[in-house]
Structures are given as C-alpha cells and as structure tokens.
Amino acid sequence: METLRKMKQVGTTAGIVLVVAGSIFILMPLKVVDLLAIVAGLIVASSGAYKLLSTGIKWKNIGAPVWHLIIGIATLGIGIYILINTNVTISLIGIIIAICSILASIDRFSVAVERKRAGLKIVPTVLFGVLHLCFGIVMILIPKAGPALIIMVSGTYLLIAGIMVLTSVFFFKDLQ
Image 1 (cartoon, rainbow, N blue to C red):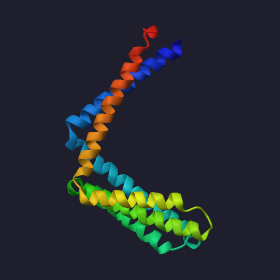
Image 2 (cartoon, rainbow, N blue to C red; image 1 turned 180 degrees about the horizontal axis):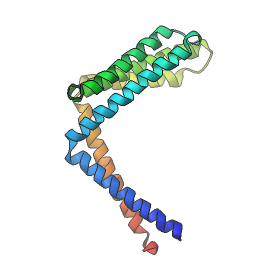
Image 3 (tube, helix red, strand yellow; image 1 turned 90 degrees about the vertical axis):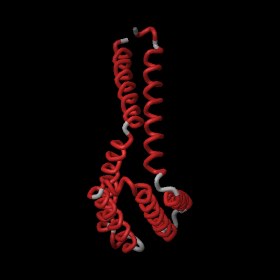
C-alpha cells in the first residue's frame, strides 16, 4: 500500500510537470523555439562528431569512407552553425531539418550498399533512407511548418499527457 501511495505522488508530480511544460509550449512558443534551436544544434553537432569519430575508427573496414567523412563534416558543420546563429536558425530550422534528413537518407543508402556487399538484408535500411528523404523533401517544401508543428504537437501532447496522468492518479480512490 505504501508503494502505491508513492506511485501516486510520483504520478501527481509527473502530471503537473507535463501540464506546465505543455502550457509553456503553447503560451511561449518563441522561447521554446529558441531552446529547440540550441538543443537541435547540440544534437546535430554531436551526431556529426560521432559520425566523424566512427568513420575514423572504421576507415579501412567501411565502403565509401569518403562519403561517411563528408556526411560527418557536413553534419558537424550544420550543428555548429545552429549553435552560433540561433536567430537565423530559428527562421531556417525547417530547412536545416530537411538538410539533416537528406544527409541521413544518404547515410542510410550508403550503409545499404555496404550491407548488400556483405550479403546482409538491406530492405529496412533502404526503407529508412526513403523515409528520411521524403521527410526532407516535405520540410523543404514547407520549412516554416517545422518549428510551428513541433511546438504545437509537443505542447498539445504534453498538456494532454499531463491531464491524463493526473486523471489516472486521482482515479484511484482507494489511495486517498
């Protein structure tokens, strides 16, 4: 019974945090976009650094290592650019997401070629490459939809999730 009470406290806290976060996303979208630009820059730069590091480590064991190197450098460069120019990034985040998505598709297709040479299955890898490519094309066609969509969907989701958690916590009448 004590465990259930602790779970209720955790659920109440989590629900409140989700409702507050969702409300912030909905009420202060510009601040959220700023934060998203910084987070995106860190993630993209880290991804590029990882790609460069893994390419350097596996240089002799991978096919087309130059492509992997180019993708790593481009991704790292985009990440650094995002961090240095957050205001420009905010207005261009849809395009940046598109470029990163297209780079990811090229990476997936390159990995599919390597897998095919090794006699491994390539269908899932090619499928993910096509998904990345399609997403990138859509983001190029409607770049301003990126940040707005992310904020609207995230805020709405967080708000609804918080309400659901709070509702389920208070639904258990036997714990009160």
